[in-house]
Length: 366
Image 1 (cartoon, rainbow, N blue to C red):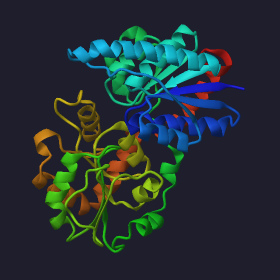
Image 2 (cartoon, rainbow, N blue to C red):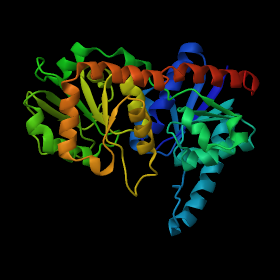
Image 3 (cartoon, rainbow, N blue to C red):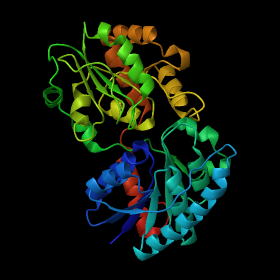
């Protein structure tokens, strides 16, 4: 019986793709033993345990590109995490490790390599993040979501890289428009704009929606995921509803939407594409990000697979114009999701699951 360890954490983008692979592994080989090594973050633990997966927390240090005294202290946390991960992997007799990234994934990848346990690591965004760059040194295989990612890799790294896409849960494609509308309780005779700010919400998007909602609700309803503790000042009504976060209801709400305004994290892009929805992207920009969402956005916009508002373009006037333009262009509402589906592979989970199970059998790619 195969035993597969998973690791990753920090945001939903490092959790839900891993859970999608777990879902596919269970479908292909129900007897596989599975467990997760994470940072102990409550939302992370809850998501994993709700999926019926054993969860083990380890120490981890945040990875920073800039100089900081915190880097010095975090080295000791990383060393502790390696020791803890090594003990967990050895005790539970893991046959392989799948890493979805995030700073917590580094100690388990190092520990697995020292135990000669095969490691597969996955990168969702166009350019590899720091954790992926480190994990790649210890990985047998790198799986990436975009063809363009290969240009960021050295020749010897490209030889162990597969472009398979970003894994999504099968339930995302099984949403029901009527159930979604019934859950929201909004005016069923109006088009629906769904606003998603990522797993933690986005204050920038919340403020933009506050500015344009009075105009928009004259022509459409708005369902707005604001993020935990980030409510807007707009009162709920039959044309506007805000909620902190969606999990179980997300597939139905996606199915109910006509247009989506969202961040440009890979998880959001793939889920909205799988639901066949036109997107207006407002990527996270500035000093607090490495620019991965901007890169994601530019590729989709270049391929006519989404509309994008980057940096100063993300203002109320241009957002309102973009939404109304898309609302009144039914041909564009159909063509953008079609172009996105040509660009973004939405069957990654099944292919990755097969690869993981093959590694458990042989320790090598089949």
